Amino acid sequence: MNVLILTGAGISAESGVPTFRGEDGLWEGHRLDEVATPSAFERNPHLVHRFYNERRRSLLSESVQPNAAHIALAEFEAAHHDEFLLVTQNIDDLHYRAGSRNVLSMHGELLKAKCLDSGEVFPWQEDLTMETPHPRDPSQQGRLRPHVVWFGEMPFGLDLISTAAQSADLFVAIGTSAVVYPAAGIVDLTRADCRTVEINLDDTPQSTAFDESIRGKASVEVPKFLRQLTAT
Ligand code: BV8
View 1 (tube, rainbow, N blue to C red):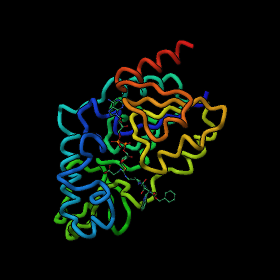
View 2 (cartoon, rainbow, N blue to C red):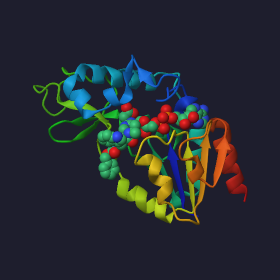
View 3 (tube, helix red, strand yellow):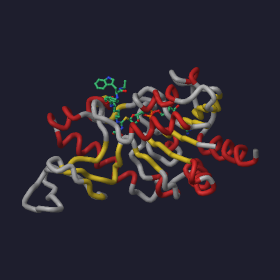
């Protein structure tokens, strides 16, 4: 049974990572697509760096740890690794820290930085600013950006995701508002005989595209769902 999982900010919410479209879905009064775009970075790199520096520091704080949903997915993968792909929209590293290995971070990773000139990617845990010296040439400053996919930029791994969707026998979307494309459209790429399940607190614009909707917290419903799956 080929299993494809898609996760969004909702799976990390109980780990203390704020979601995008929670109460306000804003950051310091800025709309996401005002801050997470190439033009925002062109216009005001200091603001954009500050936005990601705050999230990186928070992610690295002791209080943010993988929760039962991340752990259940890692344990399921370990038992079914040859037929399992975890696609995440999240840029946190909680799936990796929980033990997941076959993870496709389609919107990039907060703990990596990318060179604006060469595209080279570096592991990155410190703040990034316009004064940050380049790892390859310290005389160069301000030539790094967060290794994340902004609005208007091409997500990673779309071909692999499309292939996995077409061969999936089970597709589960966990904790995503199904607002952002192409991620929200993955369910539409699955075969008619693929079992599709949406695990979320609320309905989403794509809920009707799923065979089943499980309403509840990811930390409760994901382990329960995977336990039942393993039992059958
Ligand atoms: C693209 C990384 C071209 C950065 C993110 C104009 C110009 C260009 C493009 C567009 C345009 N208009 C529209 C588009 C397309 C655009 C888009 O979809 N916009 C939306 C806003 C309409 N998409 C893009 O630009 C994408 N690129 O289109 O390229 C292309 C593509 C394909 C082929 C050819 C060309 C790039 C989008 C990626 C942007 N980067 N993140 C960063 O993180 O800062 S998106 C960001 O928001 C997240 O990564 C995430 O993917 C996305 C959605 O967030 P969610 O994960 O769903 O989280 P959210 O807060 O929204 O919802 C949380 C959910 O969890 C809720 O449903 C809630 O009920 C639930 N929940 C909460 N707690 C729990 C829970 N569930 C269970 N348990 C809980 N405890």
